[in-house]
Image (cartoon, rainbow, N blue to C red; front, top):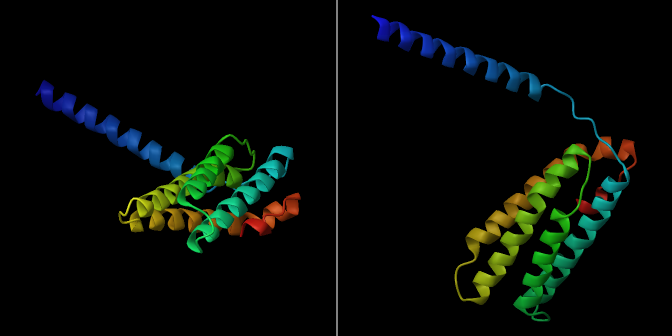
Length: 156
């Protein structure tokens, strides 16, 4: 009898804790995102644009035979390091900061796999999928960021 009451008590605590967790999660997702455009946000946007351009340029040169794999890999790894070390305040730009380095590193891994004669499809698909997600975040935030004074059109 005592064991059954104890089990019922534990079950009740778990259910109440779960309900509270779900209520808090639902409330948190209903909050409005407040965008900012401070100095660190503008610096991040500028830096991210440069890194995208750099990796894109080396990648294009690699595909056309004008750059070697080591150049592309080094550019992608440097881009990941640079983006990771930035400090945007805006929540959407923080999401870009979180996923951008992973995208660059997956791209570097794809180039390395191709250079090693291995399949690069998985890494390339990951890089492009993450890139699409980052662009979706930026597209959604663009009107509010523009209104705050940050232009992210070069990143799209």
